[in-house]
Image 1 (cartoon, rainbow, N blue to C red):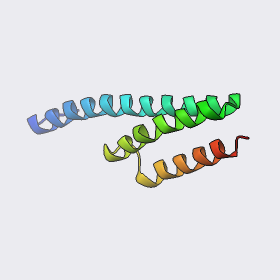
Image 2 (image 1 turned 120 degrees about the vertical axis):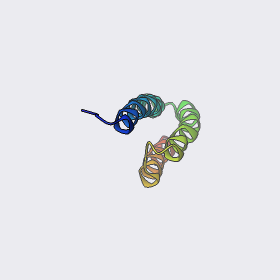
Image 3 (image 1 turned 90 degrees about the vertical axis):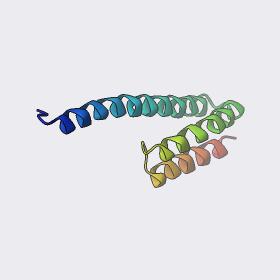
Length: 87
């Protein structure tokens, strides 16, 4: 339990950051899921459009510290390869 004023303030800040980061992660996962669904349906145009929307959202997560740069790069690489493989 936080006792000092400093630790109480840090606890409040941590709660706010947690809420913001949770919302960011949720938004990114939603975009990733849209790409996955488009790939599953076999619609290449929809998959490409969803991937194009997903990329800036994922990179924004990197700049905000929600994801590591290599994690985002790996996700984008795998998704783009799967979209490219659609015939």
